[in-house]
Length: 387
Ligand SMILES: Cc1ncc(COP(=O)(O)O)c(C=O)c1O
Image (spheres, rainbow, N blue to C red):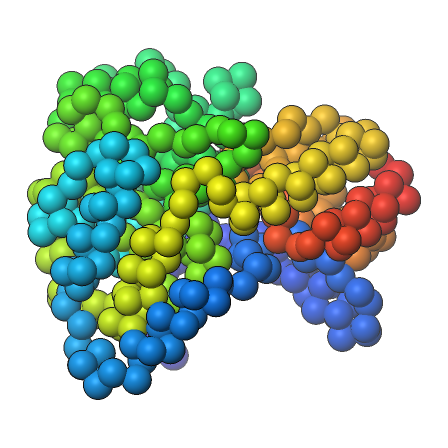
């Protein structure tokens, strides 16, 4: 009866209906499914963060509408954290905004800067919201394929100058979901130079900066000279502090970008519940660089899974960061066929790479969001399938 708006019909088709249905049926029959599909940490939020929330929730001062841009104390703490972690100075009043999850900010910023028909340079495969946010604003994604031969980084030289001239934004995300690739200073420098040459806003999604291994330390785009003139960076407490359900994140950087995002937010939604922001203050205050127990847990899981996958005949390199493995699909499978077979015969759920855009075909993504015992069990089951 109700015709949906064009923006809904433009969404890419959902490809995993059959796999989802199969999984539902198997679970209904009591099959023990090991879900390595979703990027949602199985680890709990730390007790001291929960305690801070528990106290704050009882204070009536926190029961009222929160400010759109975030509590001053939280924005201040975010600026302190950036200084300690990345040696980047931020003005908490004009260069920081609090978000109801990074997804919220990523989706909303296009509404502030993309007019109908404008181009946004969007990586593929990628977290889907860069693409859908662009579509919902009436913009057009211009896809930048991420290939293994380029370290899963976009080839800026391959972007035609007339496209770069028309582009309003470029999306990047390192450490990367789904490929688990990382990027170094020279890459960020080339992005900043490119963006400044063409007057493009760089939107960097840094949600996985604290899930890194073997002593590796991901950097902020804003560490690059001149980046603040052109860049905004999205960060989230979801993965860093195992707080996906709390919905708390922030964006920092270029003040016009922050202001534009704020204008959309203040008209479309409200601020984050103050008790949650107070928990966020506790999380950032107590953060100690280099001793992230969470990252160590994922590192051990990564080693178990990479070793097991090698034994099963997969060619996968151990990633330096994120809790994902981006695993090449052996011949003759498509990513969907392989995911279906692993579900059918091993009861293991993985995400077909195609779900992150057609350039993700040829890979599956495995999330390390189960404990070591379950991952070892998953490996044993995959070995038995014999691909
Ligand atoms: C690359 C990337 N960006 C953003 C998000 C969203 O994070 P949040 O929970 O803060 O909305 C995710 C979540 O999976 C992600 O993988």
